[in-house]
Length: 205
Image (cartoon, rainbow, N blue to C red; front, side):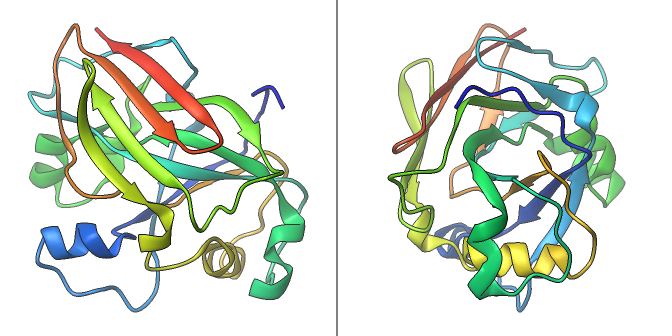
């Protein structure tokens, strides 16, 4: 289905890939670590990512994103898929130097254009817990994994987030990034790809 959504919020999960945790030499989290991105950061396929003057290190992070289909609260794992409209690709652009400087994530994740999503929403014919996921910069492969490496499954994430806050139609939950995040430079073409969904392409400016 075409990507025409109006979410009330974007909830993101940090450190949700086993291979990413190993890369960082970090213990696996006992429960999802979540943060929010503002809806004002959303852009779409072929829109431009703008590097802000405040940052000298802006990184890419390819992620599978859940799009909620109907209002829900306190959903159990076994029912979670009934509340999902579909899945899309999200590139969780991050000002890494500001993240490290601030000691928390809000500023680093919240600049305008820091949430590319697209190119479409897919529900049928894919297993969200077993999809190849990768990212290329200027045609060079940078990130590559599979969603079966996620620490918390799609169902577990929806159960956890909905136990905290009500979820509304078009709300987005992004499920974390695999290893090898890295820096973007002006002029780069970044392509985030997920099996069965397509390619989200953006140019950095």
